[in-house]
Length: 266
Image 1 (cartoon, helix red, strand yellow):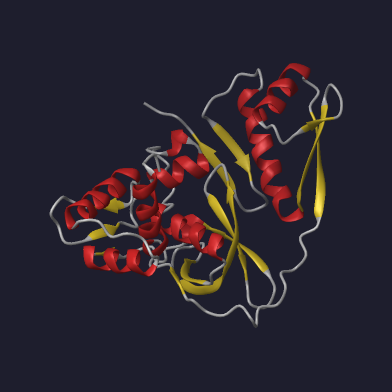
Image 2 (cartoon, helix red, strand yellow; image 1 turned 90 degrees about the vertical axis):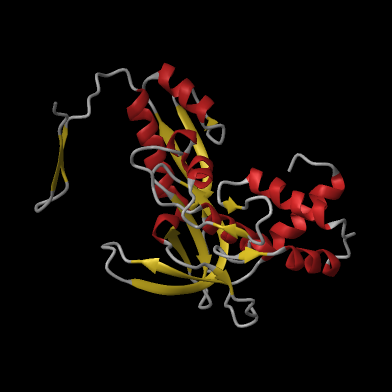
């Protein structure tokens, strides 16, 4: 937040309370009470209105119009989340994933505060929803979406696609005393070899986490649960940058019963 210290302190107080739900609204009186609870000096009401305007200007999911009684979060906004997790070009991409900025920020705040969350999760076919509860312990960027690592009460760590989290996400304020220790996620080494030395040089410059061990070989140290996704990201990058003719038309065999065909037509 590019503001002087008193303004920044007030807006951080506002954010810490507001982001405990993905769809909420707040009035000046609530904001005033939060400042008092945190022992922060409460300025004039006009200044507090200006704080709402400053906060609205920072994020794509905040809606506030000067003089209105409520500052509101809009869960349908997703430009910030797509740009942050998937890359700037995904902001308004034709295939934009429905990754919600307010949902992502609620989960990130819960992860920082070690808070349990409750959220509805859409089935792969989009026909039903299931409610999940757990503690966010990691957010992973992807090439097609963003993913959350959720620590469950029984000790499992599950991965959830943020694009399939729909509806209200909120903190439960539940105790973690009965949570079993997270299941082990052992560290592994992802060995990457690329015969094209020029392309290998570009690859290691693009992904600084890759540690070179030779002119055509590099190693990446990461948890086992992230190996598959990371391998996909590296392969996709190499395919895009390889010096070969590429076109949108393609036919992909997905097994004995499924094929994918894509054609460009006029």
